[in-house]
Image (cartoon, rainbow, N blue to C red):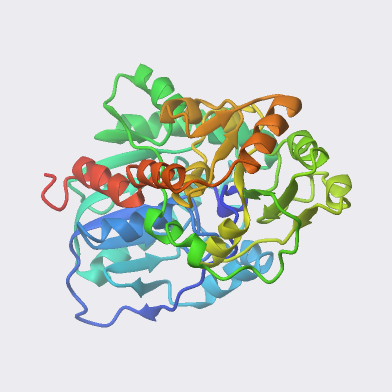
Length: 404
């Protein structure tokens, strides 16, 4: 699983790094986060969580296994394979990039990849002179539990990766088999969305629901952010910040544009999503991927946040970060009827599924005055679902920072 399938609309978020110095120390009670997404790619849930967990313990962030073939196809990943395999990227965060052979998740290569990743993990822990408290693994295809001698092994069940089987990933059967093995090996399972929690409870193992969160503090300042130079649309503006791919329903965006509401699209676009006719409209603009730190400027430009997702299996078992980010920015939200939206259980998100009702809800909210009371209510709600709150919940599950 890699950040190619990510949900968020930001561009690559690079940060300076330095190699581990001899005697760097201070890595006791380490939390090893075996991530589903590369640190250098789009800033997603695993990196948000890793950064906030440093309040409770030092963190080793483990990138998905990377081959030189994969790196050549992505400039962001190219830099990763040429940096030291183990390096410090932020206070109390070390990063490990396991470099493996080509096609690491193919059936014939899986065992080799596992061996290489496990060896890299053992060496990294030894180099840090660390005593791992816990391993939090969001990589179902990797068997890493027990390698570090951790006190607690936690499987982080995120998205329904089996639903991606027809998109170049491992087969659904292999993903399900690997997930069953991870749930059997783990001391605790953390589910990132209500659909996954319900499915995994049948395993008979302990399951804790800890959904994704938002950077409430960052988005609270959107109204003071500079206006983005590449946005010149007539108001009102409805915005989608995310990956434009198979998860997105173009008919919902077209219906919004038909109502005379401008549509701003922020994020990478997959070539297999046909939105060419949408992009020819004068009230529609696609500005491409943006660094996460720049997103407040684009949130400032929008009047309504959009979650125009289809009801594919992957979306049904997901938890869109963008919903909470829009609310943290003080913007109303219109979303399709997803289990994660129902779990939030708030009137601050309007739910509509068909193009007419979706566009109607957007038009109504876009033309409503932005009252200070409504903005404050949305931000209060988002703050209750911040990454700081989520990290505190995870620290308790992991048994770190007083949560033992």
